[in-house]
Length: 85
Image 1 (spheres, helix red, strand yellow):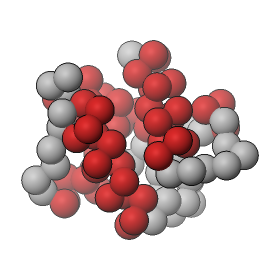
Image 2 (spheres, rainbow, N blue to C red):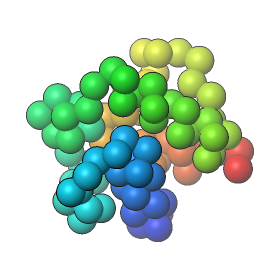
Image 3 (cartoon, rainbow, N blue to C red):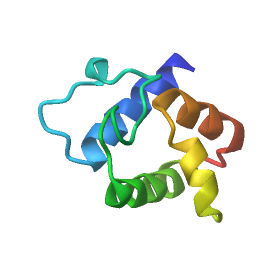
């Protein structure tokens, strides 16, 4: 599970072009949106594409996205339980 969390942090940094951010800078329990990492709705779309491309997970319900993207930890738990690749 720790490997998946680290990999997710690296992928988030790469996909969202978060310059000057290292995986260690991202608290796995901090919110991805708002006060935490400060992501926005466009970033959410990028994360949805990342999940589909890298893990074979398609989000059909936008409300579910709000729950899944609470933190890196919540996201990694969801991916671990639902990934198809």
